[in-house]
Length: 222
Image 1 (cartoon, rainbow, N blue to C red):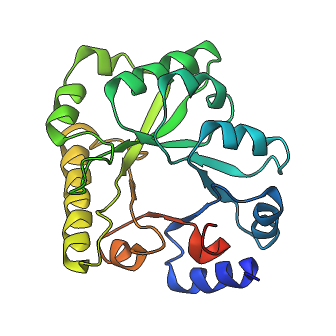
Image 2: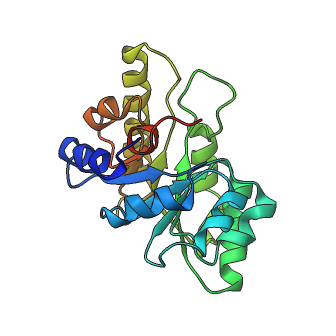
């Protein structure tokens, strides 16, 4: 039996208080999320829109929900009314779609730009070239209902800690480059979301401000 409360409490001794711990609750039942909530956890991450929609009304209203999985444009309208942060904005098309849906309800949605840092082609994300082109376009300047708060990335799934470290360092460099060029005066642009159960310690060394942790909290997925 996984002791969720103890796991969270142990993690919080290992993570600086300045770093946000997002508990990845995908595939986990409402009861497990409530246990984490009752131990003080308030930030939860879900991968799939439908699964999130099935849970949100059954759980306390003060939970801060983060969408961390690949988001399809046709699902944006379902989460825009309540989502606290979309961490996985991986294309300009998706960003414009979020802006459009948020403008209909006069809401500003916090988002992170997902950058492709891994060697696997299957992972999603912008290249820096795409981000520079986007940031310098007139269309980007017209976006008023999205607040870009930083970057997110997923390292290669490998036992080579040197490679993981290098990829996280690259993400931190991308953040600094974007901050200096386009977001210098923007105090909202401050987050580097990197690090999961298998590599969060490396991510913290490389400057992560948000870690996304599932199995260490809830136990391995069935």
